Length: 337
Image (cartoon, rainbow, N blue to C red; front, side, top):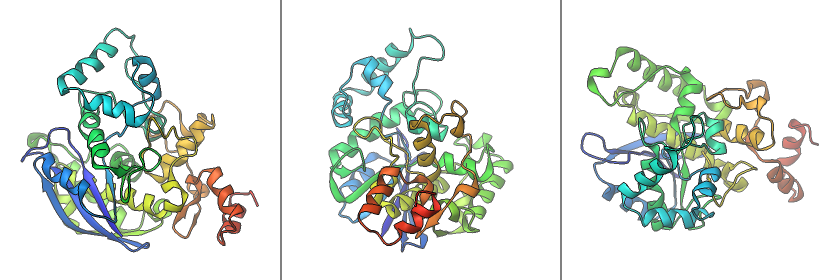
C-alpha cells in the first residue's frame, strides 16, 4: 500500500515548503521512499487529486470543536461549516476568530476538540505561535474540494484516504518534551539535533512496535533537517499506516467520535485516550494535562498488528457477531470473553 506523510504549513514557500514523504507498507514494515517538497499549494492539490489507492496522514487540524461551532453559530456538520469557511477570505476568517476570542474571559477564549485534549495539542482556533487555525483554513476546504475520504468525517473516493496526523504526540512519547526542531537558523541547536537522532533511532530500533504493530525502515538523513519537517513527515506516515491497518475497524476512529463535526487524530494512544475521555474517565487520561501518558505498556495488546486498546467496544462487538477468527483472542485479552 502507498502511504504518504505530509508536514503541512498554512503558507508554503521555497524556504518553508510542504514536505511529502512517500512510503510503501506491506503490513509488517513501513519503508520510507522518495521525499518531495512543494513550495506552493499547487503540488499538494495535484496530489490530492491523483489516482489511488493511497492513504495519507497530514499534519493539521481537520476540524473545530463542537463548543466553538455551536457558540459561533456555524453549521453543525463538518462539510457544511468547511464550505462556509471556504467562502471567506483569509482576513475575514482571522477577524471572525479574533471577534469570538477577544471578549471572552481568560481560559475560555479557545476550545479544544476531544482528540486535542487526548493528544495534548492546542486549540484549532489558534492563530498565533503555531497558527493551526490558519492551517485548518487552508487545508480543510482542499480536502472537501478534492473529494477524498476522511474516515468518520467525509465520504469520498474510497481509494484516496486522508487522516489527520499529529507528529508531536508521537515525538513526545519517544523523547518527552525535548525540543527537536526550529524553523529559524539562529535558534537551531545541537540539543535539537540530538533529539531528532534519538527519535529516529528509537523508531528504527522498534520502540513503536507495541503501539503501531509494525517496524519502520527509513534513511538516517531524515534526522538531519533542522526544521524537523522531514522527520515529521515520517511520523505522519506512521500514523497513516496505523490507520490503514485498522481499516476494517473504522480506521481506528474513537468510539465516542463526533464524526460529522470535530474529526480525530489518527494515533493509537490518542484514540485510546479519546475513548476514555468520551466515556467520562478523565482521570485515566490526565484530563487537562497536555500529553499525560497514562496508557501503561501492560495494557497494550496487539493481535495481527491491531492495537486492541484503541479499538472501540462497538467494533469489537461487531467483529464478534461476524465470527471473525481473531475475535475470540481479542475478547479474551480484554477480559470480555
